[in-house]
Structure formats: C-alpha cells, structure tokens
View 1: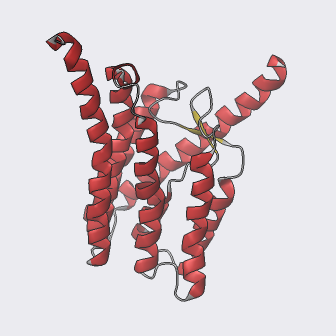
View 2: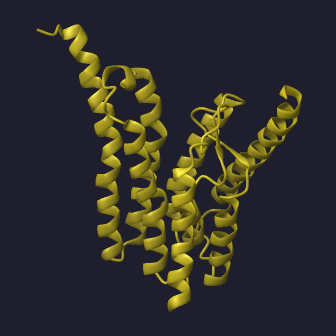
Length: 242
C-alpha cells in the first residue's frame, strides 16, 4: 500500500493538471459570452485564462509533475488550452463583433493569425534554452483587448493582426515572464501591474483613464524593449560561443 507521503505529490500533480485544464472551462464560458454578444464578459474570461496560464507552469515545476505523473503530458495540455484561449477565441470574438470588417476579407483576416499560431505552437524550438519565446508568442487575446478597448477601426485592427502574424516568423526572442531570468523580479511585478491595468481599463470602458492606459501601454513598451535587448544579446553570444 502506498504511503500518504508518496501519494500526496501525485494528488498535487493531478490538481495542477486540473488547474491547467480549467482554462478549457473558461474557454467554453468565453464562447457562450461571444454567442450572447457580451464582449466585456469575454474579455474578463480572457483575463482569468491569462492568470491560470501565468501560474500553472510555476506550480507544475514546484510540485514536480513530470516526476510524479511522468506518463501524462502537461505541456501538451497547456498548449491545447493556450491555442484555444490565446488564438482561436480572440479571432472568434473579433470576427463576431464585426471588428475586422465584414465579408470574405474579414474571415480571411481572422484565419491568418490562426494559421500563423498553428505554426508557432508546433515549432520544437518555440521556447529557447534561455527561456524566451521564439517569434511572436501568439498573444492574440492581448491584441484583441487593445483593439476593443481602443476602439480601433477595422483597417487599424487588420494592420495590428497582420504585423503580429508576420512577427511569428521573425526570429525575435520574446520574454517569458515567469521564466526569463534577466530582470525577472521587476518583470513579474510589472506583469502583475499590467494585469491590474487590464482589469481597471475593462471596468472603465468605454472611457478608459489616460493614466491607466499609459501604464498598460508602458508595460508593452518595456516588454518589447527587453525582448529586443535579449535577442540582440543572444545574437552577440552565439558567434562568440562558436
């Protein structure tokens, strides 16, 4: 008979996997919100999925799920949840709300990020050894958030989506907030502040505060700047190592 001491880590590992899978429940509720035309509710659910996604990996490493449940692929589960919540649902939300225009062109525009993300999710080098995302990391839910909160025109929304889709294929390393070691503490603190700003801007919509909007956009600027710096540093290090 297994001792309680040996059983508890296994139970904890399954609880972490269940926590990751809860993103699918949130995804279903987001679909319901889209069908009911409740854009704000859908964006709140996007926030919840980001909190789950931002914390389940840390919990998995702390509990050592690979050690205690080695035959269950939690990373694959995480990718399934992420593709649905970070790529598929945001495009459904934008298309259904008419934010991409109308007609065949809107459908094509919605499909482009889905195909780009399918490529990005299937890359074996999508996450580098120094814990960066290689290529734009399919943050379509964040793109959708700004398109909606800033009330961008279909033309501007199209430009944002197409630029990000192209960046999927550009070998820039993007910060992985919970794992990138450079400036990790301030990055995590600023990420939490950005999540707060997301919530505040949703509460304030459709008239967001300039202050909170500036805080939100400043974090994006910090994230991009740090990502470009780390990419440049990797570029300098590779020839030296060779």
